Image (cartoon, rainbow, N blue to C red; front, top):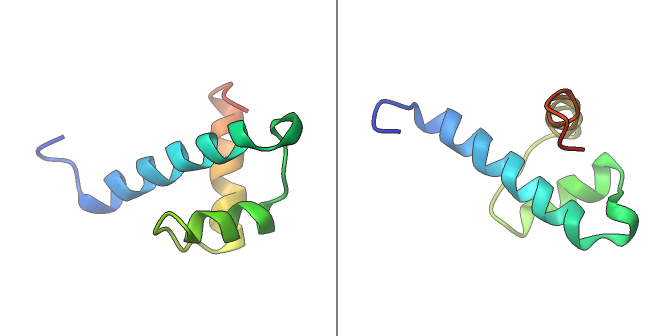
Length: 64
């Protein structure tokens, strides 16, 4: 992690926070607008497109 660009670290943290948010929601489901708003409470302020892209990535990894 020493050579890891800070932007990559933030992206990874945002994805982790998204998983934590989903784990707290009924049926582990939500839409990108709700997730984007909740991410703001954790210091992340992505666009809905960024959230959608991260959800796709998380899905490709078999995490959602």
